[in-house]
Image (cartoon, rainbow, N blue to C red; front, top):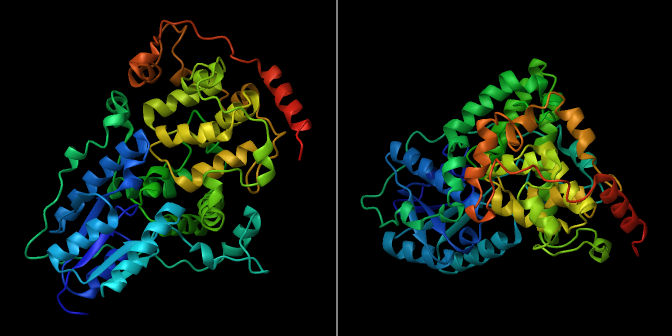
Length: 473
């Protein structure tokens, strides 16, 4: 305990009260705790859907803090400037936060930590976003892992501390600093009319995250090994939004999976492996940050992908009008719900990068704009894995066939019926919702004819294989 000076709790992608090491440390330090969220350039740079989803999460977090007698202080501006101003206003003696691992955040946070310490302000960062800090997982030779399976084998039996409960109380200051009003930030502006459609699919916040995890770990996880690939059923954990914004911790998810494994749930180990796949993405982003912007395998920088985002092919792909039902249904699911089934993500990524020959960066940027569960590490690694340019990637010549994939993973046609409206006598409400979600400027109607394929699958496959054979590396 260090007396009465307040601690600023700088919240970022850790919008929860439970299993929050930085929050617990702030409460144990002594003195008031002032939670603050800063709208800096990293927030302003977010795409439309993740920025809108962040607004929903901040609203719930503010309500959760209020129930504890606390407040969420909102400020906009350069993070270092905002924190220094709040220190002046509140007399704070410390700033605590949860670590992030992308290069933009690490550079910002390192500079802020050094600046605060130079001023005599205690500055501490904590792990709360991952199971394992990236620098604590090493190969026997002392380097980082470039292949997933050896990393899984290295960490699967590690002890992971159990999740901590939320603090019983959060000490409040006698006087709160002024706060911006969340609605004035207008974080959902870029979603336009799509926000009203996607809103009914969102269940933001820690309570909803824990409810979903409870359902999944007791009822859904047993069939997860097979059901997670079936695009027409609710067979996944549904935790991606919550993990992306830290509305639940990776540790809580891990221990729920371990408990299910010990109960004999057949899909539990598969889900634990998926949690470590997320860790692998962060491991690689930390050690090789160029994965976010460039081909992870440098030789793939010479591959002749085209990068014309205004091409007919890219426009058809982004609008869910390629004439390939699996691809189109997946894209429409994203516009209506804010998410896309993981199996479908592989199909649309393979189709864009291989059948259409487009650079993976086009898809990466589009997902960054449109997914409410956008995560920098997982998005980059996912695209590069499918494209063949990334670590432990699927070979480029592995070209998913959307037709045979649909037969395998949507045998009853539920997914297509749910999301494709054209030329149907009675389209489903979800299929019709797509036309309400997308921009009016696209000028689309459910009465339109369903498009012919922008490229025949056999033609696209042959073209992709020819480009691979002709590569100069």
